[in-house]
Image (cartoon, rainbow, N blue to C red; front, side, top):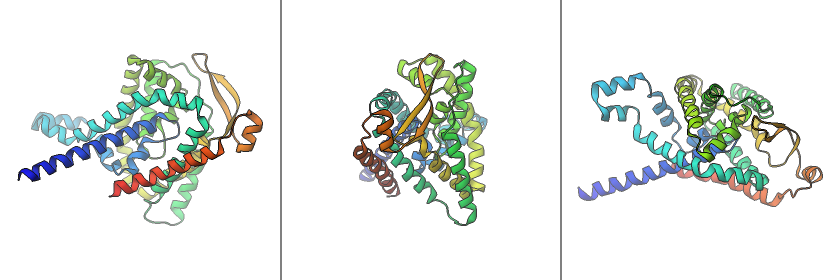
Length: 316
């Protein structure tokens, strides 16, 4: 009996560590525009559990607390799962946010190439979940691809980061967080809030981060029920749309881009306004920079392979 208990304890610790690392991966994905934490949750096999846990965060949980106590309420909301996952994400965001900012400026081609490969593999993983292949999923993939192209070429909004706008931005961005194939940080980029949030994380601006968190909670609770309904009633169509969206939005993470024009954000900093996707040769002609083609190919294959390895490990 003692050996069995020790074995169970060791297994529980290992599962907790794996869950924490999945949270770290989700947090890292959300820091980079165009990469989705929801995708990481999907390919690591915790997406459905995450969605159900989020759905349980309703006033009904308070009734469980009142009638059955703290332990029953904690189990009702799958509290241990959410706590470990969120801790992993928090550690990742607080430690990686600054590094990402540096990498985007110093090694943009390599970083974007890595995530380009990662997103291609992720789209294949999500598309493989479609059970019935006919004309309908193909149409939804094309529709998702069109939406992805439009969104990825959207011009970032330049509005002042007022408390209300940060709240609304958080509510919208968190919807992207739980959608496989849509990045919360990418939505923040489109809304013109990405640099503001990254800077708030770097400087620990607790007031702004608190407003953002409240907006995220409001959006999360309202959107999780809708998403659950879509997956239960129209699973293949939803997966096909997300697959197409990911493929259509690949232009956002294409390694070689030429910035045609800039705009000033609310703090007076220059951010790209219009960018063109170009070939490595054209990139050299227009920018005079090193296309780093060999490194880009290696990193793209690395990102692609990591997703496939992660999925295989998760299945085992």
